[in-house]
Picture 1 (cartoon, rainbow, N blue to C red):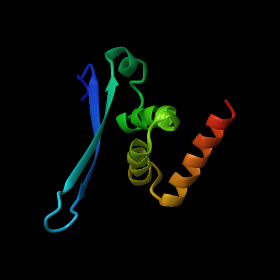
Picture 2 (picture 1 turned 90 degrees about the horizontal axis):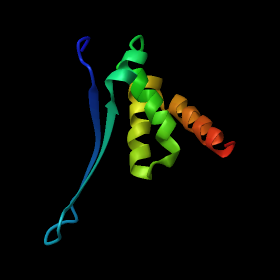
Picture 3 (picture 1 turned 135 degrees about the vertical axis):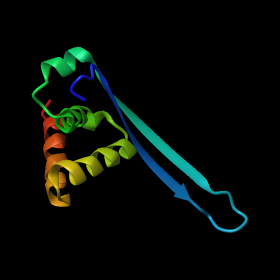
Length: 101
């Protein structure tokens, strides 16, 4: 990755609903794409990719739909915060920042 000039990251939320015999099943797939251009990566070369992704998700969190927010919260909990409670605090902070704008 050190010689990479740009990075594209895709996140996806996939749900499958089976309504039983004789009924149609339903698939739902929601994807998010994150693009980091060469100039941005050069400016932030001392930061890790997960930190850049975290900052991007935090910046856009309040403008996303509920499915995308769920995906972001999952990333925060599993890879950044390590617990549901810490992620809950992060979301509260983001909501308060949004309300103060």
